[in-house]
Image (cartoon, rainbow over all chains, first blue to last red; front, top):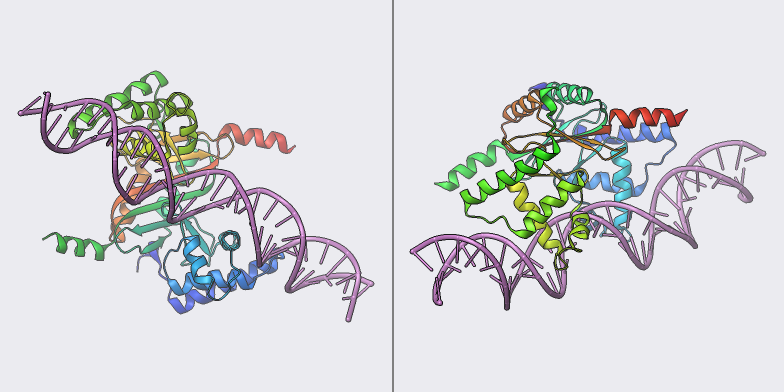
Length: 162
Length: 162
DNA sequence: GCGGCAAGTGATACATTGTATCATTTGTCG
DNA sequence: CGACAAATGATACAATGTATCACTTGCCGC
């Protein structure tokens, strides 16, 4: 498997964010609360990008007191911790596939099935970093979101067209 | 000046989008209407990214009948034509700095002064294209938005910290 | 234990951003 | 001029995101 797009096994993916979160909470004197766990768990079981309000819908049944603000606060926390990404182009949120290291990843989004693949491509990172330097910017956020059709959807699409 | 970030002279920048728009309208049997010109002009005179509703505010005085839907429709048209970009990370819109060619550009956004620099960096384009291929995606949209502090704002910031 | 403090939540209200619908108007072309 | 597509106006609404403030929770030192 190419290094560019490691895909973590689901069972292990469940462990990593929690470990990371617990470590970070200790470091910073923050708490890994019920609500934060709940948001994380939903993103995990769903296995795809969800909007804040889709998350809210799914949390309400278990906790009728969930609110938009609450969900956004939890998401904010999880993003700070690096275990959740926000997809700017679709205004949604997704679990990070490999939170074991700090990273400046790229997201590939299929407009057919909605699948999101997370990549950590050295060339892209190097190129964007270099570009920032060239233009005198000290970058602190890099949004790289590539949208198109994944292999599966492309062949389906082609089949339908006939 | 490095090829990566051509910066068009303002006077010329005013011409290019109009030319391009007129050409495109002819091609496609579309119209370059009052409203569309108005949105384009506002983005031009303002010279920075504006949200749809900021645009609306500025258009209302001249045309009291402007509506959100109208503004979004005009923006949609201008984006199709390639003379306006949407900044996903700030939910705003900005005039394209070099609409003379179709492109898959990168945007650098200063969180200090809000300045947006548009780049067309070969390495970045090549790297993102290659990444898409590797993962079997046929890309049709590439969002590359790099946020940080521009040179000017960085030195100011440093000065204030002392 | 328990008092005090910071972190986090709940509740409410609101701000911002973006769309759907449909009747009407405008421009172009024969 | 008449017909037709393109575009607009008007209205209403959907979706996304925040501000505020009182209240609760967990932790830490005593």
